[in-house]
Length: 403
Image (cartoon, rainbow, N blue to C red; front, side, top):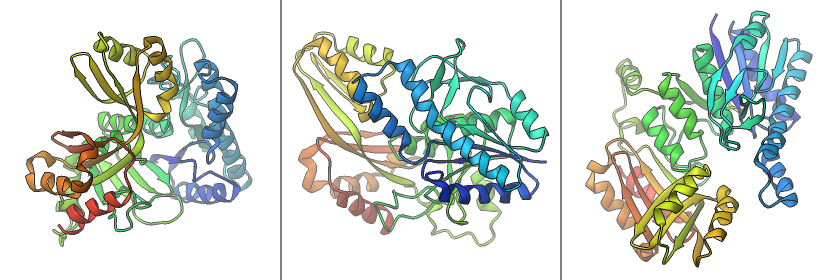
């Protein structure tokens, strides 16, 4: 009997109506003779609301207590789903992260999974139960509740799948796969049949709201195939796996369409507006600041150091934590919201025509460009303001639709 892991995001479990849709999808997998483990996020915007309420009490809430608060959202989703499945005649049990044996380090808000003791999960599966696990959370060695960071339920799902040696890990959301751009922003975006772990890691790392970047790293480490699909339809999703599996799959198709997107070097274009650009002049120890930010578990994007000037980017979610550090420096600081557009694809830097098209697409806002970063798998353009979505559409049309 195969074991599969199904993960459902916040939009999938947002209310009782959607929970019924989720339950029916779970039952379909169960009726095919699978052992089923489900990992769930908090309902809808519950995590955002809990953060907002906490910050009404304290601008920078105590990290341990914030994790204890945020973990309650997933517990509500898991218990409600288990109640529903039991009512429908399928034995189910909800487990919190710590009940499921998920041990983490003590980096609150961004903890890393150290180990998973799967004995409790296996026990419940042997009793033919559907196991519903709270995503996004675990427990450290001192029995403190910890959370894995925003989007961490994806990482929970892949980690559990790897630990239990599942056949597949399905990530269900309101989008039916990985697209060449966010289909909510670019109507002509194409869905990919498959994509490599490396390319998916770049897409997630550049800010695409598809998969948690750490979950892709885990999947690659344990060679765990991920299928990204929709909760709300039966459309074929996108398979994230290693490059060799993709080649075998393509070679097994007799009438392989050489014009489809899988043959295109560009896999996705990402517009990320959740970035803050910070610039400090006349600072004597710029490297010390970078060290301080890293020690405080703040993820730094691009950074630039020249003599006594330092500039760097951070995620908006870390704004308050960074501001506290900047206040201690007591230097004049420029802090502005910015946009980064990234084009991802293996070997992209070898295609000068793509780079040329990117630069041409942004010609009329060229003076707003702060930095261009080109590597083997991506081209990133950082702007000094939030730019209009029309530029994403124009770029997609220029380098994907016309190729």
